Image (tube, rainbow, N blue to C red; front, side, top):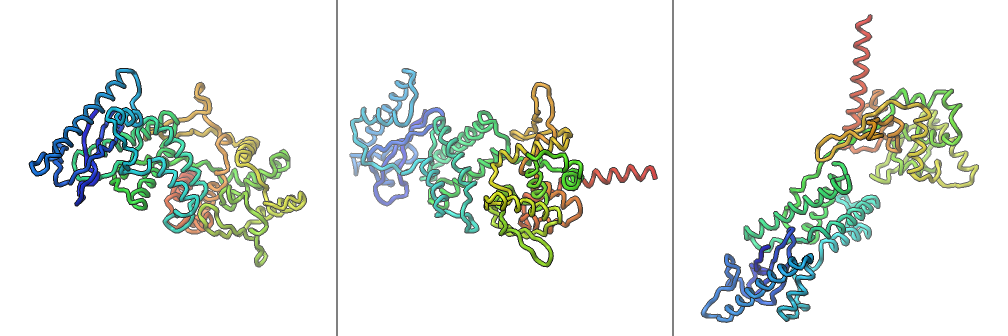
Amino acid sequence: MTTNFYLHNRNSNNETLIFLHFRYPTTNLFIFSTKQKISPSHWNFKKKRAKELNSNPSYSSINKLLNKIENEIKSIYLDLISSDLTPSNEVLRQSLNQRLNFDYSHVKTPQTKSFLQYFDQYISEAESHSRLKANGHAIRKGTIDQYKVMRKHLKILSTRIDFKLPTISSKNPDDFKEIDKYYKQFYKVFTDYHYSELDCYDYTVGSRVKMLRAFFNYLKHEKRLDIGDFHKSFYAPKEEIPVIVLSPKQLSYLIYDEEFNSSLPSSLTLFRDLFIFGCTVALRISDLKELTEDNVKHEDKSVYLINKSKKTNTLTKVKLPPYAVEILDRNIAKMKESKRKTTIFGKIPTSEINEKFKALAQFCKFDEPVIKTRYKRGQEIVIYKNEETKEHFKLYDLISSHTMRRTAITTSLILGMPEYAVKELSGHAPNSKDFHKYVKISQKYLDEQMDVVTEKLKKV
């Protein structure tokens, strides 16, 4: 434990309050107003006491009080420890006030809001659209939902580390070192909690750390809090999650194989249509579920699907092949027949869609084994379907709504569509950082086909 006294504003031209800083395990900081004021010119910054000047003998009494406060807080802390009680800032404050017999209720501390109160404001400003993205667009509901999940975990962590927003009120090297030490401990507690207790992988931890850094930037640049740049050292782990896609041959089988289509159970026909359509137009599931007749346009004997992405606000226009037009016509007719007059494929929960897609893939016998890997703290981990028997997953186990868009993009690349055209189809920005993973997958497929050709050449 350490005790120090600091001025509220060391650069003030007038008298400023003296505050006690009491640090106790683990990195908890208790800040307490002494109710005493002094001019910075009369403060010894090295000794952290008032200069005892002949011109102002009252400063001697200030130092006596500071010594008394220092002795009392140490005594209170040791009494709590010896009694097997857990020290907290609230308990320390109540006890110190009682021993000193002072009323500090009217004294305002430099920080008026807590860490979590600022985070609540961060969320509410996003919900009310008073805080926008850099491009001026409103923050998506999905992002706000992620903020709320983050807030829940921050609340849990606040019981383990004293969340605070230490400000750099001076250029004292000791102050700087203490704040730096606090943020390093903060980062360690935050990441350890996600890895050890939540069993998160690098992708999730990296996303949460980026969210944390964005929050600290908000505090610094929008709330003008002098919190420094310590948060910039928070490392956000990176993880490229393997993309699960169907091969062109498997997609062709779903579309054109008559025996398969005639034997398919009626409970899966809607989901076959949705899956094939999604593998063609490269829309996200959130957009596919909202398609109506208004998205379908007939121009010069061709049929187009026009959609503005809910996530990126990007407009796409896709010419539909005959099989996709048949799927639309069939499901629009069913929609009108049922008089639901809502969306083409109906309002189906994504969880049910994923379940049916897996059943569809299993019916198709897409059962080749897939070695599933993830990364935790940069280390590759193999994840088994059955940990005891070390059984790997089958392809159908890993099929989900994400597979549609990914298959559409990779199929287009594999079959020769130029990258710029695929980006236009999928709504990716020209400089998209996310697009490169699809190129890798298509290159792997092309490499395999080149090996096949090379082997055949040997036998010519």
